Length: 103
Image 1: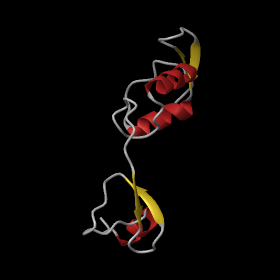
Image 2 (image 1 turned 60 degrees about the vertical axis):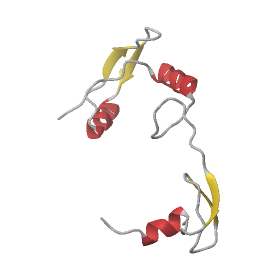
Image 3 (image 1 turned 45 degrees about the vertical axis):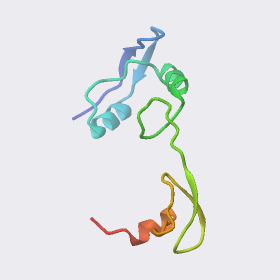
């Protein structure tokens, strides 16, 4: 499927912006079917107003609480998104990725 640049009108500021072929291809690989309604500047402003989180989460500016821990394998200080318990080992991301079961 060939993509070509498209002109789109921003729903917030009414300025035209280009929805590039590269962006369209990216949207398609992610399974997105709608084109963006806002220009990049308005998207960024809206994102900042919501809390600026760039990944995952509920999109409502929720800040996940992180807990300090010491990796049970290498001893490195790390942060984890759960409260560590003394009876369970905690691993840094490098050690966890090296020991987790392969799918």
